Length: 212
Image 1 (cartoon, rainbow, N blue to C red):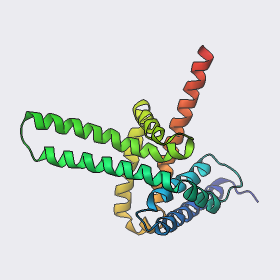
Image 2: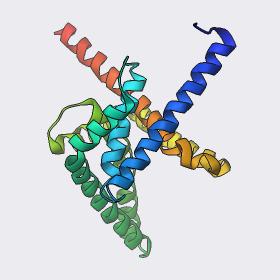
Image 3: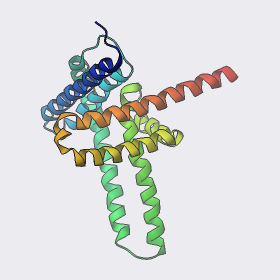
Image 4: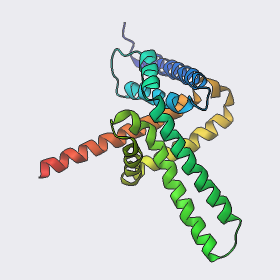
């Protein structure tokens, strides 16, 4: 029986929350299966793969099979990407701390420059998960494509940052939700915004072909 009105919206909302809780449970299992350090990146990419199907309203797909299939298939690639962005993050953090500890006009200018690069780096990383599960690319092309979306879709990127900040304050006030659907909720939002950016790029590409 199909539910309409308030009951229908309530049912859909509870169904959505239940799915997010299940996705986060799979993410936790995947992270533990890889001994956390080796599992968190493939588990995160597998979570994005499931959420992408949710957002695109794909019918009749298994959350479990989609998650573990992606986890196994992309284990080494996602860990390699995770290692690269972790290394770059540490390098940027080191320079931020180093430059902040020094005085002078040159240090201030360099600090602002590195801070700007760090901001772009952060948004690029927020696009990385959605890009990874949406496109079939070569290894370094995932980073290039994520950077391209960061620069070409500033509204979506800034919205991701806004969602990240809102998520932080929300979880600060309701920390009891952290074990249930904190990571999956944030990932859903990032995938949702990423999907909007992908649709925008697809429409622009189609418009360019028509104008030729």
